[in-house]
Amino acid sequence: MKFSRMAREVQPSATIKISTKVKNMRAEGIDIIGFGMGEPDFTTPDNIREAGVKAIWDGLTKYTPTSGTMELKEAICDKLLKDNGLKYSPGQIMTSCGAKQSVCNVILALCDKGDEVIIPSPYWVSYSEQTIMAGAKPVLLHATDDADFRITLKQFENAINDNTKLMILNSPCNPTGSVYSEAELREIVGCAVKNNIYVISDEIYENILYDGAKHCSPAGFGDEFLDKVITVNGFSKSFAMTGWRLGYAAGNKEIISEAIKLQDHFTSGTSSITQAAGIEALKGKQDFIKDMVAEFDKRRRFLIDKLNSLDGVSCVMPKGAFYAFPNISGLFGRSIAGETVNDSDGLVNLLIEKARVAFVPGKSFGSDDHLRISYATSMDNIKEGMARLEALLAG
Ligand SMILES: Cc1ncc(COP(=O)(O)O)c(C=O)c1O
Image (cartoon, rainbow, N blue to C red; front, side, top):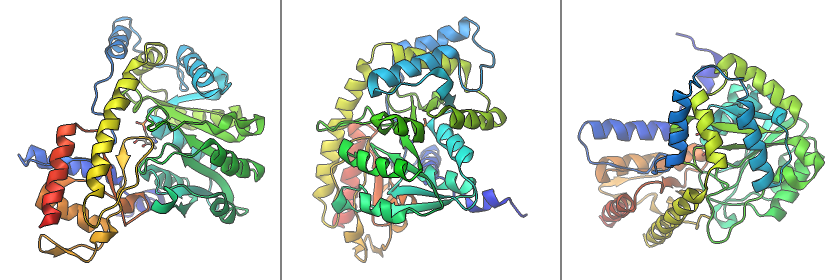
């Protein structure tokens, strides 16, 4: 059967693939520890869940406007002003079924065949595939461990040409946990704005920061920035609301209107019940976030220390999000459990088969020398998973 260009070109999501594999193995009774899913292992706070239940009983069960209810969009505007210093009106907000859909709508609204989209790499798996869906070309700019996985202004300048339409920034970053400083963002995003390049700033991990790292929203650097930067955020990570499906984009009204038009024909608005819960998430008490981040921080320290103690493995200390991105190239060519691995896929498969631990190959995030480990799982799992890894490597 001949499938469409889009279906042929887009690659499956590596994170979803690994998580499904882990679920299937567990269903078969296999004791496997999964580090694949980028999903907080916390339950959505009670006040938010109660708001969802109340919405059902209040009869909020009908279609909403595609872009979201006015109350939710106003709550998002208040949040963006209070937390990020960004002044938007509700007409500049689109809510969607997750930040994933918001990013996709904006890419589809802006990009065409022949356009180039600059993506600092390692990168979140969906950016490149959504770019390909639009028919545009992802241009990956590689940042190494030594550079703390942050691209430089020079790299960005060198990648710009007449076809460059968009850049996608993600700070704090999935998969590396790196965080750009305000000065770096001013330089890089400033260069984009000067060259008439749009920027999606995916800020979904803005609240998950460590060691005093600061989050910064580049749309706030001035009017030209507010015009060219589309700020994307969501509820999945900060409020442990992955299953509710709520994210949003804020930006130039014309771009947002075009993106909403596309969403009209895909999903319409996200769930009315989710939207009511989202208002409570933004307006209700926020102490959940602090407690969750404190727990992530404990896990982060343990995990990175452990990884760095393994011969052939080195890991940069992440400053945000809940992922470690260890370099495993020191293991390539060695015999491990009687087999030789030469890439991240090979190591992931070996670890699943022989140690019953599942990580995600770095290859799908733009680096075959790495693995992605989500520490959004219990400390017990992390300890047991690391013990299994250590035992396998010790041979
Ligand atoms: C960088 C980044 N952006 C966006 C998303 C999508 O989040 P959601 O669609 O659940 O809001 C994720 C999820 O893993 C992510 O890591």
